[in-house]
Length: 135
Image (cartoon, rainbow, N blue to C red; front, side, top):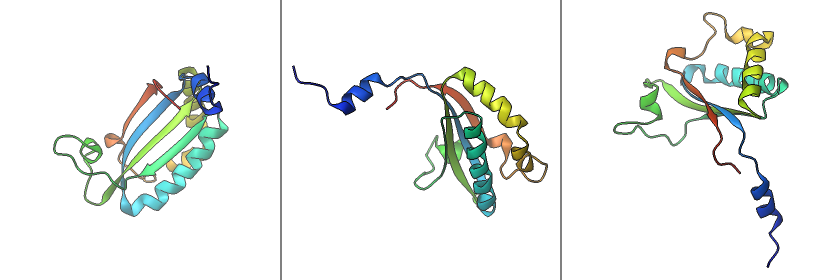
């Protein structure tokens, strides 16, 4: 019987217990630079409190679908772009603890003041997901 390659062994041992927060966010193009500042700080703050990874992506190849799509989901306006973001945690329990700490972290307060929020929170889509398959 042939030996498994190290890559196959690693994949076989991979746990699928990660917890993921996912976000779809409409951001005005005129505020994209400010949003990027917030995202960079968010990455630092979430990781400082224990998140495993933090990702923020700007739409590049995201067509408007006939019935459903990212732009339709957030009622994207002509002057906006879709951000797709996700944060990973070891577990939902860790996610809940980390998010509580992040919301209390004074570094994030600058971006939570009235007039400083750079996206329409009413059209933000978010949710927590248990990883089903991962690599």
